[in-house]
View 1 (cartoon, rainbow, N blue to C red):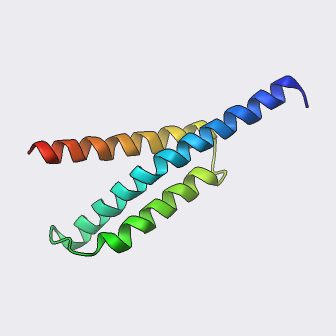
View 2: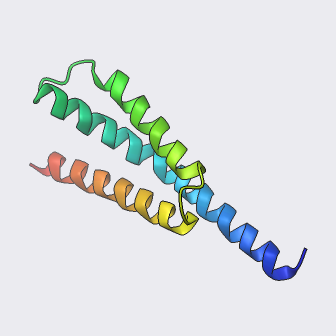
Length: 93
């Protein structure tokens, strides 16, 4: 393999690894938000169902080739950051 091909493969793999790591908090947050929206505040045990579904869907989005790997990484990092920011704001209120 040429050097440029090896570097392209390494950068793509690094993007996918970072996307998978960001998919877990992003998916968990999306699952909890979905449970909150479905129950209008009385969450109860529903996040036990919706949080794993959100995490699996985000990990699948990170792994499957649905566009550029850098775009998937950026989307999941923004989602994870948004969920963390929302949690911080909720804890301050």
